Image (cartoon, rainbow, N blue to C red; front, side, top):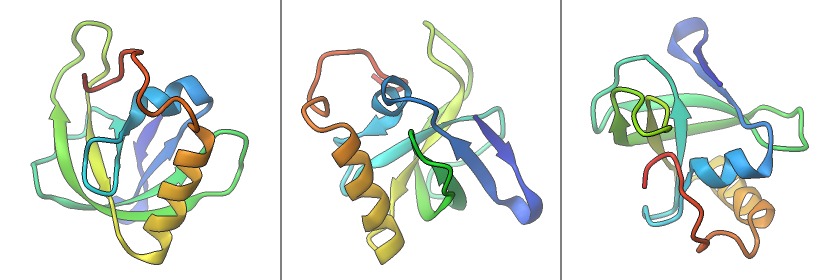
Length: 115
């Protein structure tokens, strides 16, 4: 799902709605996306991610801050980190598209990668 790219850029390809649901942290201010990865991160790190959402081949640029870390796989949840979606135009585009894709599911009871 996430791989380091050139210059420290990460890519995150979210293949389907179930994975998007498991990856989205609606409880974080402006939302956040979980990025499965073995790359070490620290809370507060600023990162740049190229995100591909379900049913799209477009890579959307996202700057954000690391707000959640799962350093190892446990309980069926992958290792990785969550990045808070920025409040800039690019971030708002991603947030709006994620919430459109998850309409009616955001407050669901399915387990996610973080909770």
